[in-house]
Image (cartoon, rainbow, N blue to C red; front, side, top):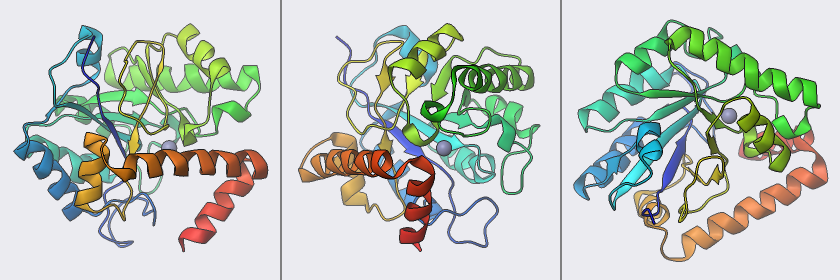
Length: 256
Ligand SMILES: [Zn+2]
């Protein structure tokens, strides 16, 4: 029985709107907060494991998996040097059609992530929510993103993070059929059981999370984990009631 495994989900690192990348008022984490979070983990002897560590099937206590979604330009410029300084690695889930767009990684920066000791996974081709797609479009999202990332990196891409965290049984079956082995959702939790082909839980690290709350999430103790789980269920309800597109507009509006 492997130890539980916290999986952190970051997006971009931006102090403010002026920094390179796509600033998001909810998900852009200030680089100084990121540094404090990494230092907190390093001081407590947390070690990051990657997909290879998952493949091995067991890991020591105080293992952690750090992940980034979307492929923001700050991933390579800001996050990688800060991770490397402290001996951490991360998995970067990249939306393949975002590559080269303003504020996002350029295609040639994807192999640079691997050269820096990081790993790459798919976050869809267009970032459309897989649960909203018909079977053909779903297959295309899974296949196209994987093919693009594999051609850029020259290595197999075996991990997928759900865009928007939306997906269930059908998306899981499709992902496995397309050769993905490690599947990451965004249901918050400590991953007490971890198996290939099951949705891994992830802890969304938001801009407003202070270090105490970060620690509570990582250690999955105190009231915050329950609040995070309740918040996720509530957001899921909002998405079902409003539909994904209207929900996103509301979220953007509320975050202003
Ligand atoms: Zn995303």
